[in-house]
Length: 162
Picture 1 (cartoon, helix red, strand yellow):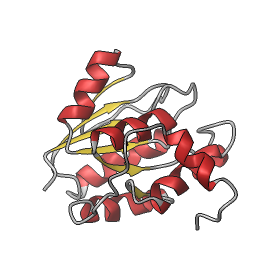
Picture 2 (cartoon, one colour):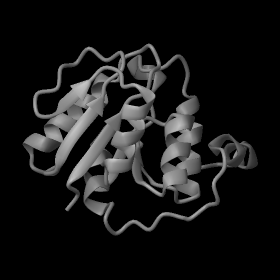
Picture 3 (cartoon, one colour):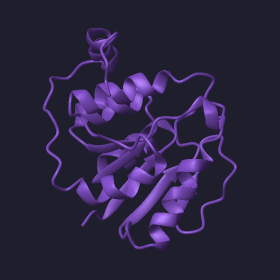
């Protein structure tokens, strides 16, 4: 069982309420049992079942990442790279333009790299998040040397990630 989960939505100036609502739902359904803390960014959804703060300082952010057993993150390059470099289990939920969460769908490419390189699990649809949480303990992530996620992405641009 995962005891500590850190959810991070990044600092992009658009909401990601869809992910926050799903976290609340999964806590209510007892799929998430551990303690959850979330950095909510510009979202306006107010969590009912977990603690949160809009923005964290760099030290506080890194402390939350290091303490957590599981990171649930948007498909941001910085968060993916940090989790990869620290060997943290992660579930990536890409922000989607169609839901007003980003200006384009570039996070789908980054999520594709995470899945293809087995850096973490990806919830392509929000309803997949619960299944991924239940599978995360068995997931064996690839150990890739420290480096920048954009270097991995460059190697796979143009490949089909599906």
